Image: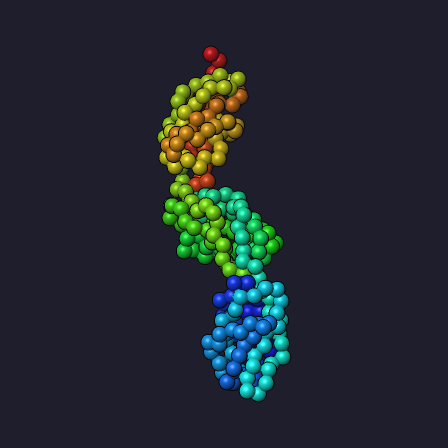
Length: 244
């Protein structure tokens, strides 16, 4: 006698359906020694609300004609999210996010706000998901598995693309070391700054300002660019490496 699904949360509450023959007028559905509440019954099926439980139990249906053969039912622990690889991504979507925790192997969906996304389950302790397109702002990140749901401790932020409106000073020495202030918008999640493609040490001061130390570079003019979790931007004009 098939049962669907054949696993569910230790906390109960899921609807489980048995199919077979001779199931009319079912008087009880048992998961181990615990009774389930019957919600629908026909001669070929019985649906019931799963009681709480743990481990593997025998599930049976009782009718006036007798008790069905037992079928195994597996209680699954609720999922737990311990860590999220990044807490923000672009409004265009496309960021690959890794979630680690436990009880993740039966994950059915990951929800960003109201948008469901199908995950790639790696193991009981890890899954990956690609963020969807979404309006700018913060949303809850929720994992739904056969054992229940789990919400990440911190919301996930969808970040609009940055703009770089300018920088100062405009020149520096080839030996590097010049402190340069970069202005723009949506800079709070900056992950990198480059001068002519060379990475620079930087610090985020606010959503509109980043400070960077010009790296060592050959003489000449270079572009100043930055990358955030929302995208990349290049400042207008060039930074000139010259001999002082």
